[in-house]
Length: 374
Image 1 (cartoon, rainbow, N blue to C red):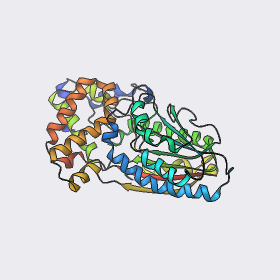
Image 2: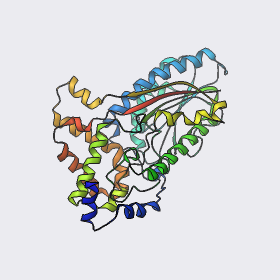
Image 3: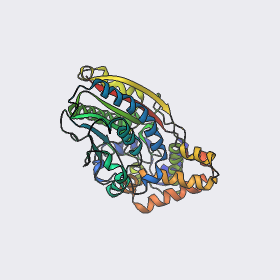
Image 4: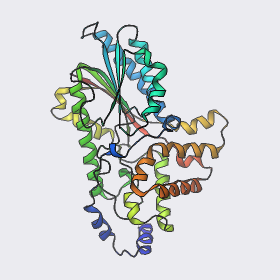
């Protein structure tokens, strides 16, 4: 509260309750597809996501073998695979290689790559060009995975998604409390505001399951790695705490207004494992899905790890960590407060962190989930 008083005094606002009241009617609900994008540099700054994709490959390998053993469909018919949230493709290569090695010489395979329209699709095409000949068709679907079916009903055999399901389809459901230092809803102390974000995330999750159920053949699989929060709802990644601290300091210094602070938020909700399992405890999902596997893991910061494996100066590690954050955060933050203020924010992050790469560790938590359509 000492921090909050400093901000409120600076901008002549007398009451915390008044600030909360100012927030309540400021619902945003602008579709993420209208502004969220993975930048052209995302391939070069997605080490953690690529590492998670390697973990997912073990699950993909297992379900692919199950598909081949079951062989409940016409042996001559092609298999259909879809990735939801492919970004610019760097994390797609390893899973697609598994499909090629497991299926390529046995069956024709159609692959559908899906993500938001504003992504850099040119980079995706370039990334996948060397492997496209492995598959019968390599198709691209530019749309939100929450807003309809991506694949024709009852034709999908395996769907997969890595580090995509935490993005909210309608963007930020509300602004944060006036003068809020938080950037992610998991950091919020205002439970009333946080509930609106939870409700939005659970609505998206239910919609995702509904559309994937419609797309899958009976006996088909969905393999998902979901960026998550800990069981208590907190964030494991140190970078999130550091970025929140820098935002707080900018308000104290007067370079970020309370109004901008309320909007400077990420349209993401990192569900707990328990929240992820909620839909499967009631109908219709009890009758629709088997939860084959679920595992919670806290990842090691891949950028920090690479600096230990090789001789990399701490300052260079920090730069790479900031680049990694910017590659997925900038489009949302620029939409909220403008490019110049976002640039000032990252300059402040660099000054605050110095050469201490511990402050920006991307030790994300994930849930690995395998679902089978009954």
